[in-house]
Length: 286
Image (cartoon, rainbow, N blue to C red):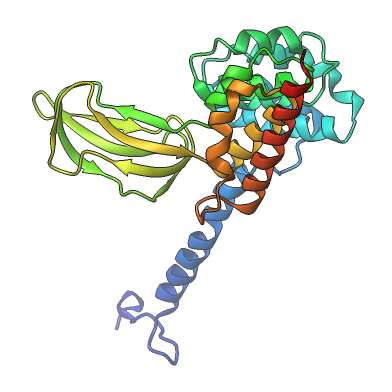
C-alpha cells in the first residue's frame, strides 16, 4: 500500500489529528476575534501620547478620534496639565463631519474651563445640526458659568418624535419599551419601486410609543414613534438646570418628580432638587 493511501491517524475518541487541529483552531478564533474587536474599540485602553496624536488626526477612523478624546478627557479630570498641547486639536474637532466625534469633543472641552478656545467653540456648537451635540455643548457651557444653552438643556428632557419623511409602507418596526441607542433603527419604510429607508432614533433612550405597525401605509409627515430620553441624559440635564434653570423650565422638570417605576430614584431626587433651586432663585428675584 502506498504511504499516500494510509488513512489519517485517529485518537481514542475517533477524531483524526487534522480534524482535531481544525476544531481547536476554530474554537480559538471564536474566542480571539471578539476579544480583538473589543480591544480595538474599548475606549478604556490606555494610549501612549504618540498614539493619541495619531488617533486625533485619523479622519478615516472616527472611533480612533473618539478613543483619543476620551483618554484626554480622563487625563484632564486627573488634572494632568500635559494634555494642554492637544487643545488646538480639540477646537478643530468641534467642526468634524462625524456627529459622534463632535459629541465626544463637546464633553471633553467641558472638563477644562481654562482651555484656550473651548468657550467660543462650545458656543458655536449650540448651532450644531445634531440635537445631541447641541445638548452636550450646552451642558459643558454650564461649567463655564454660561447659561447660553439653557434652552438646549431643557430640550434634553423632551422625548424625540420620529416622523415619516416620505409616503410609503412600514416594512418592519420595533416594539414599545425597547431600549435603543442613538442612531438605532426604529422602523424601515418602503417606498417607490422596492426602495427602503431606515428611520433612526436621534437620541439614546427607550421607545415610548409606536404609531405605525408593520404593514401599515403612512403619508409623509406621519408620526411613526416617540422615544423617551435615556435616564443618564435626563439626569445630566436636571443637574444643569439645578444651576441655571428658570421658572419657565419647571413644566419640563416636574414630570420627572413623580413616583414611577420608569423613573429611577436618583432622577426623581435630582428633579426635586432642581425644582427647589429654580423656585428659590425665582423668589429671590426682585
